[in-house]
Length: 155
Ligand SMILES: [Zn+2]
Image (cartoon, rainbow, N blue to C red; front, side, top):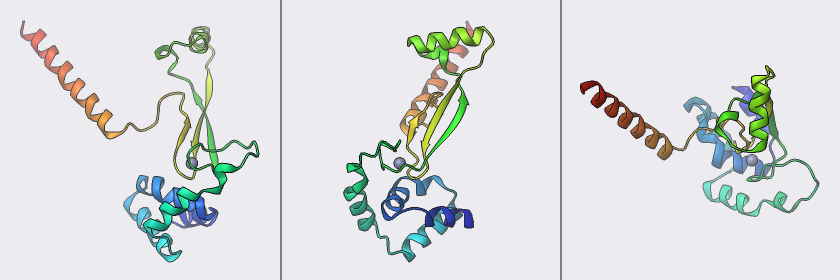
């Protein structure tokens, strides 16, 4: 519980606005309530949040820090992940990675996620949660493939 509040207290006004707009809904209901109460206490209305996001002065910074392209915060998180998606992509880099995997070496890539707004800056394994429409499409495909399999079984 207090971990969330600690995190929120470490954000500046603009980061808090981005967090409220993009990341609040990704939390469990109880945590969302804590966040909403915090925002209310700090006087953040929806219009204030939108205004802060539109004004974000960090978008004009050029300090060469690695920043999130959406909220321009430098509070980004890097995870080293095993790169499992090599076979699916086509670049030279991907092919090289596949060879390495065959040779018994595991590839690691950085998965980079913004801690403030949840933006996936680098997503080597396509772990990013799918938008709902895509999930539905995948569901439809599963059903179609299932139907085709059944037809085959009948014949
Ligand atoms: Zn961000």
